[in-house]
Amino acid sequence: MGEFNSEDWLRKTVEKILEAGYQVEAEAFNFLKSTSKLVDVEDFTQGILKKLAETSPPSIFVDKKIVEEVFNQLRSKNKVDTSKQESLEKIGELEVGKGVFRPYAKEVEAKIEVLKDPSKYIASDGTMESFSRYFRDRFKRLLKILGERLDVKGYTGIGSVLKERNGARVKIVGMVSEKISRGRRIIFRVEDLESSITVLVQSTKPDLIEKAREVLLDQIVCITGFKSTNNLVVAEEIIMPDIPQHKSNHAEEDVNVVLTSDFHVGSKVFEEKLVKLFLKWLKGEIGNEKERGIAGKVKYIIVAGDLVDGVGLYPQQENELEIKDVYKQYEVAAKIFEQVPDYIKVIIIPGNHDATRKTLPQPAIPKKFAEPIYHIPNLILLGNPAQVKLHGVNILIHHGRSLEDVLASLPNVNHQNVTIAMAHLLKVRHLAPIYGQKTPLAPEPKDWMVIESVPDIYHTGHIHVFNHTMYKGVRLINSGCWQRQTSYQKKMGINPVFGVVPIVNLQKMSLTIMDFTKIF
Ligand code: D5M
Ligand code: ZN
Ligand code: FE
Image (tube, rainbow, N blue to C red; front, side):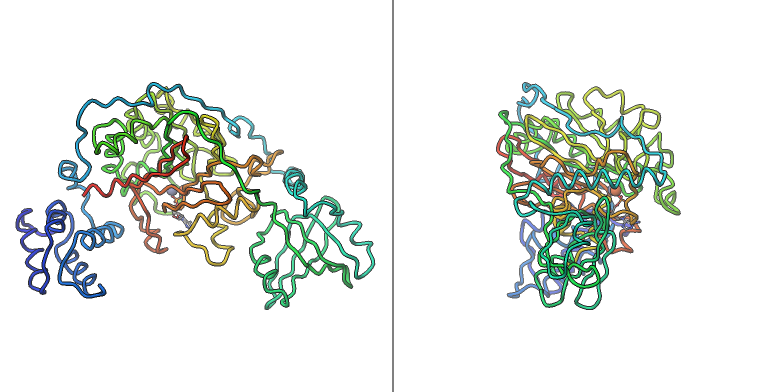
């Protein structure tokens, strides 16, 4: 970072830009001033000059947008010295709140109905018998959902299809137990409760092949086609359970819910500074009139898992931990959540880093590991997955480990567009369809992962990228995180989005985004 003061830093940076023949606009200059000494002069100027060289049409002016972009790039590469960031709170764009803060949400009574919480019902014993019982339950639940579709009506059991003559038209519902791609053909093994059969998707039907590629292992699907020799079904149509076009519920009250996740308290790269700004904003201490107005309507915060970084989750994790004791990590987490105004209800589900069993469905983070957070009266701890109604608005919450399996199975999806994978889970009506990959799943007597009631909002975390979309009237949100890039993520090329908070107004069902990194 160099051994010079802020003025030297600023002079040096500006000099280098001027020397290269560019002019610095006033707003860009103010931005540079606010970032003094947080980044290396060379890194910063080289980045800015590179951006300018790529700008089309060419311009000799350095504007704020360019400087900001380069700064954010450096930040995602962990090249911003956040230990020096405190002073920025005063000079950022988020103003210090002026006037008395009278939060409307304080006057509104909370209306929470828990629709789904596996916490108290964990019963699996892991025997083979429990596995077949589990898959039978999955099959029955999805058959019920599929059976509501008009185009699925009239299906028959696979056993009777096996007895059909060649050439007969058939319609079956089953679980996909094998999927093999042979060149441009795809072959499935499909099972129902009694029998199984092989299904061929031919290369002569490109649309159908595309659909077949999206079929996930262990999902339940309806297939129509005709019977061929050797007890083969040649597919003509593939029908996913899917959701119908959805008409959203709306709250009567004008209140907001903040959707967030992946704090990773205890990690060396936990963004404590940005969390502090988030808390200040909630309390009405910072922000312009509009931003404080949004804060005043926040009645709920939902945390979709990974409150702490945990311990012993992967080899050499201790090298990446600031706090190496999981109890202490939850103590620090409690200190954060104690500061949330008490009229705001905070719903927390666990993630793969939390101190509860890692296998899905996960019970709520237990008191024995997280005693301090149990003392906060406005916190509600639920399991993963969970489903709640807030003022009548149906919200499905799920940490999202299985999204990794879906990302690995589907063409054209990646971390940046993870809501495509979320939409896919709605299409298969299951939160962890693929068995035996990254997502550990317990053979509970009841399949908790089936999406039985269609939500108005579907909220996940885990991927550490903020991404949102609408799918058939359902709002899908993957909340970002509060952790800068870890060395693992660097290796994998994952650029996390931290300090960005989506907020949904439950009355209008509209989305607003607060970006706490824009404080500079
Ligand atoms: O996951 C945070 C991010 O890092 C998320 O995008 C997945 C990715 N990640 C983490 N661990 C792995 C492994 N083992 N394989 C692939 N991708 C991974 P978090 O749950 O916070 O660690
Ligand atoms: Zn995480
Ligand atoms: Fe996670």
